[in-house]
Amino acid sequence: MDKIVIQGGRRLRGSVPVSGAKNAALPLLFATLLGSGVSRLQNVPELRDIRTVAKLLQIFGAEVRCDDGSMEVDTRSVLSVEAPYELVKTMRASVLSLGPLLARFGHARVSLPGGCAIGARPINLHLKGLEAMGAEIELDHGYVEARAARLKGARIYLDLPTVTGTENLMMAATLARGETVLENAACEPEIVDLAEALIKMGATIEGAGTDTIRIQGADDLVPYEHKTMPDRIEAGTFLVAGAITGGDLTVTGARERHLEALIAKLREAGAAVTETGSGLHVSAPERLSAVDIKTSYHPGFPTDMQAQFMALMCLAEGTSLIRENVFENRFMHVCELQRMGADITIDGHTAKIKGVESLCGAPVMATDLRASASLVLAGLAAENTTEVARIYHLDRGYEKIERKLVAVGASIERVAAD
Ligand code: UD1
Image (tube, rainbow, N blue to C red; front, side, top):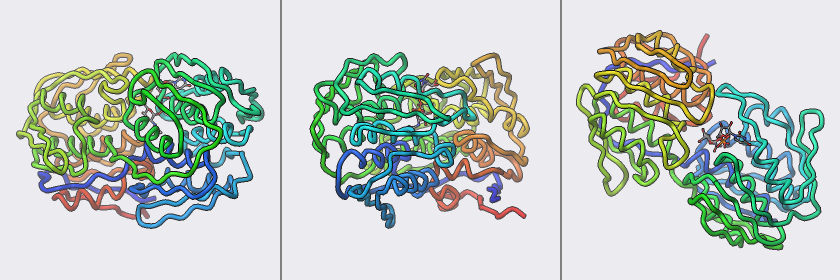
């Protein structure tokens, strides 16, 4: 299995480009199932999760063509409505097939995703919403079986503003009879991107990006042509990479309005972040100051940036408190950072980080995507060599990360393990 080997201590300088957003491309690809014909999606990152969606769409019977960042999905020959466990277990977001399949074909059978490294992550709110729209739902042999001749519009209050739950229900509602109102909906930028594509398909949607989304159901939808938004978490990771190396980096394609909480915290810590015509520029002194963060739903500080920000705080001057409010078990990077010399103690959902003057490279491994990113960041700033194992996690969310970082001065390479 490949690993990433980093010689730390180099300041990053220059421009690094942001790819299309994984978390936007996933629902956008499942949304193609809502219409019959050929949809075209541009700016699709080349990532393992995207290949998993392509495989699933092919299992349903769609034809999928990928060409240099573009994907064409022809849904005219979709026959199957079953998402098998073998694929769902490798990518939780497969559950996003449930809403579109049920809405268009009246039936869907999707494996339950099961537990994952960052917590239980149930899908009860997706199911409750579909039931409110008239679906009959059964659990059978680890599969969710949902049926409805035609879904009907409903007023649905989400107990938590779940991101994929909001996406699933918004997609389902586009083909329901009548109006659906999603209250306490997630406001993430990826939801706005999905709504834009659904509107191109002929859907009527108001309020995406706010906590109340209104959808008027249509009898049928047509295929879309759309360009995926830039990946705000990849962009945020590069901003932290610039800051943790005391660098001078432009992240091209990054959008300030997607990253306001992170940018505010980077500035509070002493980094300079400015908008340029092409993206965001970050520069930082040799040592930043400790700041506290609490993760939250958008527009709060994203849980998907918590691990990376913790790597930054490991080297800051002073003590910072990081509270994880979205997932119950998202501190698995802590013991690996400790192995690199970080001074971190955990108390429930809060990590207390006493900044140290230097980290020391070590062999480390991560258990999830963003944790892997935090170890790469720590490695970029650490003395000596850091080897990050199990990089299949990293490959789920970061396109060509080592090539992008080498181009701005990092010493980092992918090495095939023995
Ligand atoms: C999405 C993102 C993920 C990000 C997360 C939070 C995608 C593909 N993934 O994941 O990168 O970390 O948002 O920003 O977009 N919950 C329930 N019941 C449900 C659904 C969720 O209790 O039916 C809880 C979860 O356990 C969690 C919280 O709600 O505590 C938020 O989860 P959710 O927003 O659903 O995360 P995902 O959509 O899975």
